[in-house]
Image 1 (tube, rainbow, N blue to C red):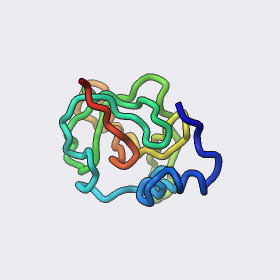
Image 2 (cartoon, rainbow, N blue to C red):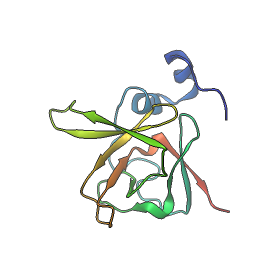
Image 3 (cartoon, rainbow, N blue to C red):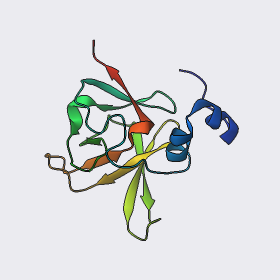
Image 4 (tube, one colour):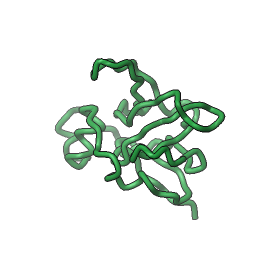
Length: 130
């Protein structure tokens, strides 16, 4: 795995402006605009920031929210941070390896896990199964 950027300038060189806004500044892409919100392709979703495997396509579901949604992450790949930025209690999901912002997790998922990882498309990359 390649060396991680050490500072903001290195991150800006590695990421697109939208990716930088989301991954490093905790932004959110617009609903129904991201590359993966409606994708049903099979494979493994990786962190754009560092390449770490995060989610299997087998855990992806249509939440109707306009962002890719998963009911679980791969063990040990993400961390959770309390987020009160909008005046409401949410839980941020970050990559365990590079600490990049991925999205948020909610307890309203329709599967047996009861979880909905609401993830920005620009923070992940799908490697298709071949």
